Image (cartoon, rainbow, N blue to C red; front, side):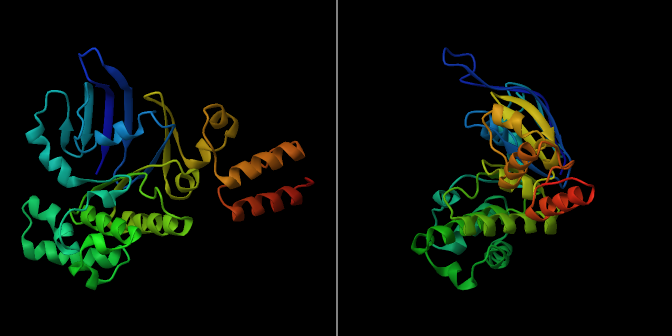
Length: 289
């Protein structure tokens, strides 16, 4: 599902003494099926941007288009309900959103609220509980008897049960250990590919941005500062350092290596394998480390 922001501005507490500009002149196109990562400091406008995608917020001015749906200041919130069926948002610590007495009821709640039959909702729950790496017998347990990691997977299954065309991930691996982070992100990426989703990931992990994203957007002080491929974005580490942002470990190592040898390798490497190949090619070309 294609998404676009057209000169979007958003102000919290609009037309009050507490008014605060959060987004300024955001123009952005996200093609259908793209995996986009959004990076930037806390307070840069990342989460505010995300909340426009399913009309949790409406722009103060400008226009957001999600497929055939338009979100503008003039649109009534009631008419925007179908957008929320198409856009699934996984917030930080999604397990805090669990509330039903069983896992099955929790997963079924969203789709049934949008008119899906109980039978169909249960079928989706059985399919998705396995997709998120859990067994069917968990469906009849209380979500509050599960581990933190299991609760998070149940909450994610509840979002996926809506069959969204757009998946929005707001720091979905927060608080997980490195293994848990990779398992969750691999699961999202597999779903992204399998279902042809448009996926938008807000993350502080430069590793995840480099590894999964087709393109990366940098937000700063409510403005869109840069957009490009991971290779493009991470090709200028100095610029990111000046913004107070980090780069993937491999990029940082390459940057320090190039400083030490006094020349560039000619390509931005995002994996150890790519860096090893670039070093070999440099040595074959007459360079010396």
